[in-house]
Image (cartoon, rainbow over all chains, first blue to last red; front, side, top):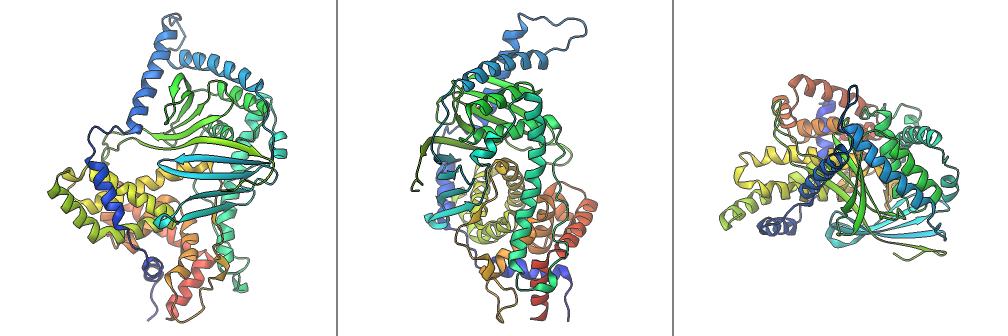
Length: 325
Length: 173
């Protein structure tokens, strides 16, 4: 009997995952962690810090700038304070020394996981080494995963041009991601020429972001790249300063307790706050994080706790030859 | 968590852990990320263990939320492939019995073409054998949304040549 597609899919999913077994040490680790008392989660701590910082900025500036007729309160005042700090950071970034060398080795903490990223700035290739299943090192590779040094040098540095460029870059990246999945599917059926030419994947559904959401996200993601020049870093900070909704906390600390300037923005379409922690001299990024705030129970959905995913950069080393992982 | 609660927690994980990891794999399309999601899910469950009435339902909902969160947060990283993984070597029609490791890349690549919600509904409905009502309750959507999303997801999966070849192979066995 020929089964229907749902039955075939069910069978495939069971067969394709039948060899996977959960590690028992994960359970033991979870119980141990749960038993530790007075452990504060960073996600909750950060949400409180962010709220306090926003309140403090609004209060400090609000006391010297009373709201008048036809003038909105809160957000405008907050943005002005943020703009002042970002303009200062932008000037500091422009005066920084440009890095030299072809290769970058970054040591990072992704959550609690330590990993090493090696970037070839000439080709844009990226290697990542991180702990894999059963602790064995797992090496990942992304060919031309990041812009090359030459491509970064061609980025515009005027605010309107860079803003437009970042919007175009976002749509280009979405298309590239789609092509990546196409390539994987095509590799699987390379030996079946009859299937070539068929439509592989339809349009993926993307969150409906505003252009300001896109610009901030792209600027924040580009700041992460250590290969950007001081001029581009300066321009990106100016673009961020011109984006509504940005909150700046100039007395923040990253996950390791290092002094930092926190630049964040809440993306209402995705219900997320993206944050970048810059060094006070705007020389480099210390940490990037995404925080989803806690949400109350509504419309039958239970309440959700805050959730944070962060990458903390421990060290960034430049070299002329390929470093070892 | 006291000793009695810890034993109950361990018992639940011993019974359901493998299934949860497999669901996480299908939701994330990556074995390694799935293990992270699995661990995060257990941590969330452990924190609320005394208050959770239905741990299985809680884990499914938590995994879906974590996958959505990670997809958003990982946007800044370029897509990465397992280095030295030989995706080309998996010929879906080779051999009488296909090993899981051979099937997995093609299946996960096809599932990756779906949106996270489509993937969650497909996995809950057809892998976890949840009814439309249960799936709707778990994901906090209407039954109509489950039906229409599942239908669209199946239509998209049928367009995947990798999965099409696997299904054809599966059907002839």
